[in-house]
View 1 (spheres, rainbow, N blue to C red):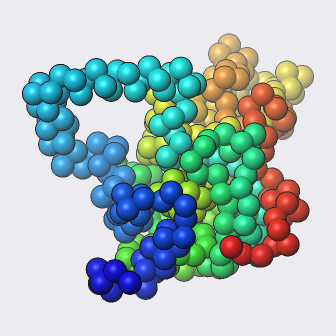
View 2 (tube, one colour; view 1 turned 180 degrees about the vertical axis):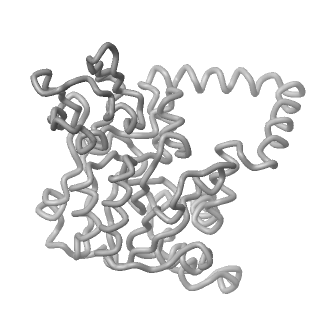
Length: 322
């Protein structure tokens, strides 16, 4: 064993041991994953630009650009390549799959160990598509790093759910003042409360988090870095596979649903609801907000297939862990 690993907590050692068994998982990947899970608040505040150090890093980068103009051209080439690939490359490393509340609930109550790779039609990214749940009843809720990085965050703070090992223990051991272990039933209560607030459930995957699913976040458009990136053209989120459908016979154009849409897909004008289908991620946050029950989710294969937990269980290899 690397003697440096004796200096880290047991959960971190388990993380490194699993990482050692992954083909192609580099030392840089291991370090990236450890730093991300060990210091999530610093990590997120840096990438969202809210941390004071972020401004210093921007100035440093600009200084390097002046000294090495080739850096600028390299970034331009990378952006052109990303655009040619459909804009998805950035999101390969860190992205979420939008889940309706019913599927998020089934996921936290899965109750068995699962090992499989989600089809590309469900999670359309290359680097992190595995769903490997070891100890799926090990769930930790912790303060949302995105909300924590904002000067005027939404509340409550403790809405991010980390599932399975080694992730749950790693977050709990290193961020104990902002995290606590909860039961699957308590996780369901958090999901339902966040749905009531109109927030969106995302199942998050990350390449450096052993290339797999590790958390369900409950996100608001004003604080969430992923939703902000999505609005700015970086496709960090995959659609649920559903799209909102409005029944004009029932809709009165009151606009109540639009106030809860985190993606700006709904707008009421002249007592008529306008639906920008291209922006809709199929989260369903608006459905229960309609006083006339005019809204529903319908499947849209052009946006990918839903992440259906019952299908996960059916396709898992006997429900055994890795």
